[in-house]
Amino acid sequence: MEFGRRVFLLLLAAGASAAGVFRGGTNLHAAAEEAGRSSGPGISENPFVHGRKSLVAAVGGKDLPEMVRRAVSLIGGFGPLALRGKSVLVKPNVVGGNENPTTTNPAVVAAVVSVLYEAGAKKVYVGDMSALIRGSTAKSMERTGILAAARGAGAEPLFFEDHDWVKVKVPGKYMKEVSVTEWIRKVDRVVNLPVIKTHEYAGYSICLKNFVGATHFRQRPYFVNALHWEEVVTELNLAYRPDLNIADGTKVMVEGGPWEGRAEEANLLLASGDRIACDVVGLALIKSYGRWKRLLTTSPWEMGQVRRAVELGLGAGSSQELELVTASLDGDPAFHARMEKVKSLL
Image (tube, rainbow, N blue to C red; front, side, top):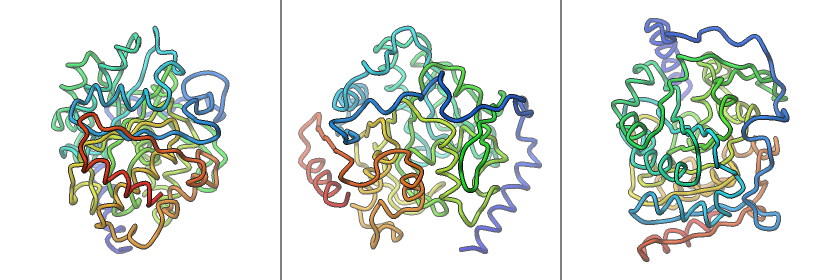
């Protein structure tokens, strides 16, 4: 595993250097900000709670816009986000040019953008920065269909490597300062839109891991500390909190990843204001298929990203602080059976 990882890192570094990955915005902003500042997106506490429990909604079906509406309504609706007249950044997973579930389903991107406009958003952007070794973000968005989906729904695409970066000081063990895309600060709200998948190096990739694409290329976890990849992923998240997480589970990668792996059609979406809670439910979903060896004999709460996130207080700390609510638009018995299994694994 370690030899393979070193080879991967050498290839990645060489490829990124040879490609001249940044066409613009290569210099970091001079100003440094403290995490938890008093203005901008993602500052308030998670409003999507019941009592003291973080809500996570799982909605099954095929009508994606309606699934988005129902999932958000089950955790409290768009009201707490006060979207009327606001700008919103939607951050999908566009790690490369491979189709879903390596990357977020473009149909889910379009559905989320459309529903955000329906809920009152004035301007929606869809942005990310891919792994770059396999091409620019623009090319990856084009190949995956996300570029056309975003534009077709009325969103403006953003390729973070073409823009500036803002330094945010954070109280991490491995990270003391995180350079995030300026767009995290330029918009009023941030909607995190990851796909649910396994990851050979980071263990898995859902909400916490998705933020890596909004941080400067030099701070990719494999460059910071490859031996503590999962912890670095989590500490990057000290720099911001998304206002809403919607996880794409239309297809779920249940083994392998991040580029290729075994996929299963789950036909569901998750919604939550809590990254840890959403990740744990996504991990339980992956575990329910019984394919990912790293999860077969351990709890989702013991995965490295989750453990560190709990230590840092980024969300729910145990299953007692999480409430999963479910709904199926078409009454599919397979969905209800799957959700019962997921609940038993939390």
